[in-house]
Length: 316
Image (cartoon, rainbow, N blue to C red; front, side):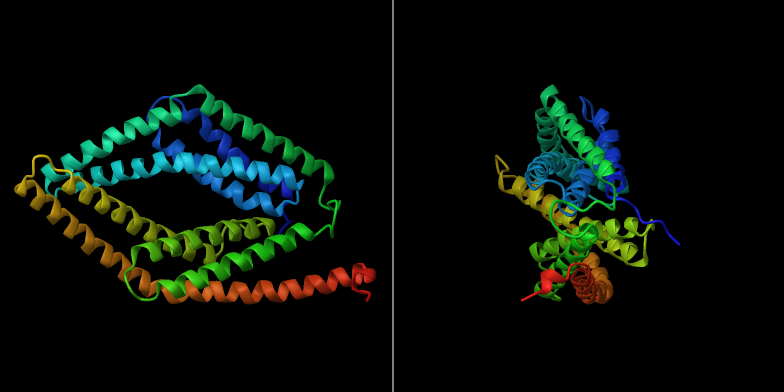
């Protein structure tokens, strides 16, 4: 029988991934460290609300982590564009002059963004301060133990809160998928990707609580997230190319045509990815629907358990 994972272990594991990435966020060009830090900050944000820490502490840490995710995301998007352009150039199947022009534009902006975010000591100091606060929160949870209830509620309340969060994330995914429909609408597909990502992170917590590393549902969601992530990256690159087209001074018809041909190629790639997503969409929708129903049943059982444990709560 798997051993249930405690709250402080969940927090420490995610915090360890976050703190391990911090040395790579100094001056330099460590793309991987920045990506790990950003993903770790998202996973910490998903965990904090269900730990049942002090409300004010949870709010402050969540707000600061949200800012961290956003700041790192600005640079990460430019890193992804840089890597994508290199990938297209190395393939040899695209116009090199057009790619070089886009690479120059992205490279300049990327350099400035990295310098602004990572070239200042106070930025790294702030991240380390957040890590220290989270470490102290983990110490507090370990001292309380899993049998000690929070100030209000049942000792197992945090696990019920996690079930409720999964149900909410699954319902959001079902709604996003329904709104996206079968058409190729970039913004709505991006919303689906974000919903998949949030559900995946919540399900990871549930799997870890049960002592599991992964599940078939998590693998399906991960593949869908990566597929839609690739589609989103290509969309962002196409938007950049169109911006460069519009800003050509003086106007150059030959360059404009080269860039237009590149956009057409990327659009075709996006449509192929969308077709793959549509093939897998039924499985993703089924996961969301099953989780909503499953966690709803668990909530009913939990309410019954709480009522039996504290009959006064049900008294009229």
